[in-house]
Amino acid sequence: MQRGWKAAAMAVVLGGAGAAGAHEFTCEKRVQVKGEGQGAPQGEAPRVTKFPATLRFHYTLKNVHPKGESVANLVEDPLLARYGFGSPFPTPMAVGVGESRSATFELKLDTPEACHALAASDGRADDSFDSALRVKWDLGETQCAARVTCCEPFVDCELTCPPDDPYCAEPPAPVAPGASRNAGFFKVHEQALGQCLARGGMDLGVARVESLEQALGLLWASPGLDRNGGVRSEADARRFELAREALVATCNERLFGAREQRGRALDEALRTLRGATGDEGLERRGRELGRHNDAGLGQPLPGGFDAGRATPAHAASIAVDPLEPGRQ
Figure 1 (cartoon, rainbow, N blue to C red):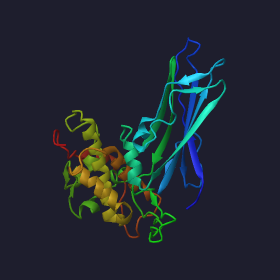
Figure 2: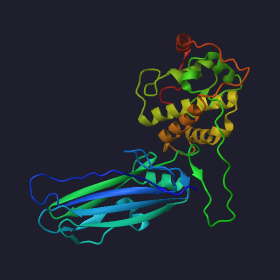
Figure 3: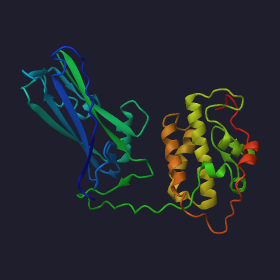
Figure 4: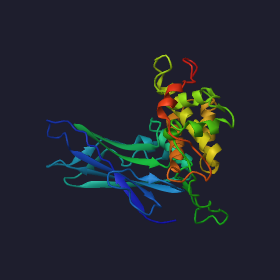
């Protein structure tokens, strides 16, 4: 494992105008990911891809009052409270003119699932989390935050062995993706889509696709509108988008043998669409499966496979949305 640190910081200072004591403190928070060989690009959050991983949180609190000491009455980091570091500094804390105080905290994440659990704890269903430090004093308040992004499951997560575990076996190196095509390809290549459907219908949870017209409907229809022009709910639109990516992934598997690269992601998507895991994670699974479908775009199609010519106008004219209004 390469050693090193990559870091990114995002600081936000909130303060009112007017009173002389309104800007007595500034704070900075940085988060670094141990075990990565290169730093994150300027302005981007560090990305956790190798596990086990250690996050190092670094805090700096500075008194910027021009004449006297400042006293912090409250210093808290709610996201890290469950890990025993909700209060990086003891309060009340007096800081002299021009002086600063620093603190650090390290948090170990053993698996990608642990990283995504932390990402979900900030209340947003995405792959990133923002850990914010809040500082209050008598006449004002300031906040600073740092963002970390977790790897995409089954895409760029890498599990490595701890150096003190002689029984751990390193996973095999990732295999270069085989050929794949995305929704844009299948929506205009009727012959390729027909060859996929010749191997059987698809139960996509929100609909069962049996015909070329239904498959094209899923590829051409608007996720936000049903066949009668009614507006789908946000959850239904997400399920529609996930069903579209699942259709494409299934065709990639059937036609190009792409199972080993994206099989687990497709299985997770189908379980979600069939109601086994609820509606949580729809957007993340759709994005994840879309990345799998895009992964092999630069690879040539298998020898002897004839996708036929692109017929966008005809394909759009025969497309029938298989999701009946109210069925999702």
